[in-house]
Length: 243
Image (tube, rainbow, N blue to C red):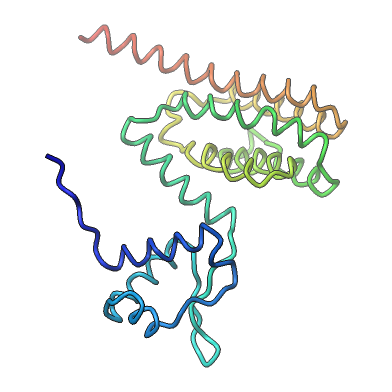
């Protein structure tokens, strides 16, 4: 027999307001009803209303200001805020074993390759400057800095594709790549090749050659995936030999 789980009152109220926001009934910048009005309409206490509003604020769905003209307002959507939630979810799935790094790399190919082609067609001079500014200098920085520059490079490419969903979906794929998940995979030869591949991508984007940009992006993703697969295969063999 399935036992129904009763949500706390603040969660029920927060979910109801969230539904109004995601459906478009409440638009960015709209003022929410006051706390007394929410108490009256929902039949809950003021402390419950405040807890619901705190939850919505933590999810970046609303902002609250004080003063005579203050109140709670529907927030304006931000790629950074939305991607943060997705990144947390991806990291949790990786930590639980429900998601593998090769799944991440597969999705990178699905998103990154066509997006790089669009970047070649849609990029501005400012986009190109941002992409070039994030080119690697493999022998002069540490792993943490290399990872950050690597992320900035690919995010700049996704922004140049001029499709907000490309960056929203792509950002968690790069942020989930952390130092502890790269043990045994990263070395100077790896980063030297990544540097070459990034320059190939930049050259194709600068030339406005979408086909060449996609080919360069596909080569890059394949290289990274093969590097992970080689290490994981060695680990599987070592584990099998011990059992």
